[in-house]
View 1 (cartoon, rainbow, N blue to C red):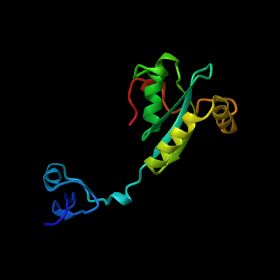
View 2: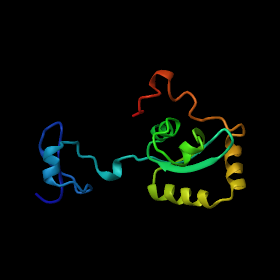
View 3: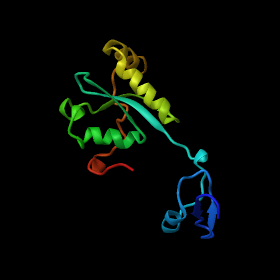
View 4: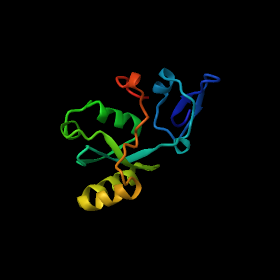
Length: 144
């Protein structure tokens, strides 16, 4: 058989799937449907979280809801925990990781004044855009 293969869940046969990087051994251990890489949808987010005193943190993630939850719950020690940057005040979605990384770098090089203009153009009151994403009963449970 040429090229990488998958085990099709419906027939449990090996299917050639040249758009992936998985090998036959891995496919035999972890059967998954053959979905060409180009057909998978990915989302990447560049976001800004802020403290109540408007200290800003710019980040990038492939799972915005989970990442904001991590900021809110202080999962990682560091800047956002130290300065209590827990409020999602701005975000953009990208289909390409390269574009998202380029945008994150661009924003990090901007002056503080320019970042504030960006935030206030869409969110003049600096409201937490993640308000209502989590219930009080799931605050200790990582979102999926």
